[in-house]
Image (cartoon, rainbow, N blue to C red):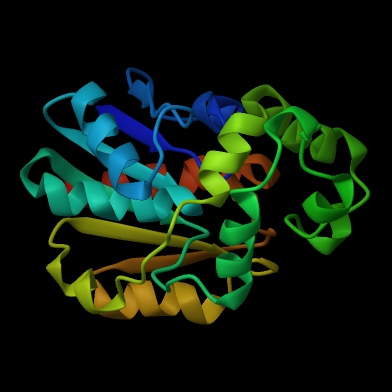
Length: 229
């Protein structure tokens, strides 16, 4: 099975490394490059150029916006969709202010996302897990200031009204202790995408790194259930 993985804000393929070892043998993985695009739409278009003809699509957080745009651009190529810790809501005032400030940001001054901000992205019980926080921060350091500026300036347009257009089998995965995306946002995805299934994980926002074994098991069971139908 071909699986295309779309990372979130300031994350790279390390986001998925613990989970990949637990996916079914023979899975062919394609990692979407988070460094080239200057918009959600551009990242979606570039990802489709690099993707196989048919594939399962997995989007995490910001990557969920990219994934849904990919579905709209090439619905015939996507066999199933997994949306993790994401939303269909548009940017609020805070995000708009960050976009405005990013235009004046000096990429050379970037030293990675701060530990303080990253602690809010994980389960409260793991806020002092230095090893985990360091791994998350390291992704942002590798991506660097230019990508930070680009991704901060991405406009996330709400697509709640367009969710009905998604026709492929869809799995929604949300963290019970996600402080960046609410359960209500996950429920909006579930309720507006026909036939979507939602599963909760005892984790914060960074589900692929906090609960990789459980995430892989959920995805595998869901896929096996679909194949058995």
